[in-house]
Image (cartoon, rainbow, N blue to C red):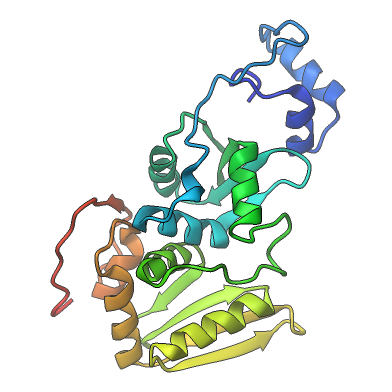
Amino acid sequence: MYEEGMRTVDIAVLAGVSQKTVNVVLRRNDVKRRARGSWKRKYHVNEDYFKTWSPTMAYVLGFFAADGCISGQTQTVSFAQNEIEILEVILDELGSNHRIVKNDETGVNILNIHSKIMKDDLMNTHGMFPAKSNSIAFPFVPDEYLSHYMRGYFDGDGSINKQKCYVTFVGGSNKYMKTLEKLLIKRNLKVLIKIEGDGKHFRVIIGNKVSVSAFLKWIYKDKNIYLEKKFLQFKGDSNHKKIIKERQVTYDYEGA
């Protein structure tokens, strides 16, 4: 992070250590230090990415709603996932050269993007705030992009049980999950919501074969980015773990 241009004070906040500790680590590893006051970013990113709706932006926003977080103390937004491939695709989509790092203890891959503009857009335009897990509200998404947003959210927080034929979303925000339930019911899907863990966790379940099939056709119609592992679960093939990014696709789902 330091070599990419990040300040030691910001690194300390993200790492949960003192600024002195960061300096010690840099010194022990013979990292060439910048002159005081000469901070300059060595990475790039399309900072205006979340300003304009598109199918791919809707997907990334949905994925961020599931697996993203915003720092309350620095100008950093982060994506976290076990599978690094999806983060590599998002990194490319954001036009960035930031690094993806792995937490050796948890095995989780983390993509940190340092951008005040992107953070402000996620907060002020799309309602994504620090510590959002229990308080996030479902953002406004134009109808023409809703299927892409839902595919991104499904890739982050959704699961499919083909044998029992249901799709499940799990979240900690009552507001978000209630809106999700109403949205799915509006599409004539059979939906059940369960409250678990003393009211701290919520499950929205799409509950029968017809509804699961309708949901599938909806989120994968005109798909661009998607996690093939979950897509293949619908088709009964879970032996592949791929990320697919297709700009122009015509796909006949009949028989899938």
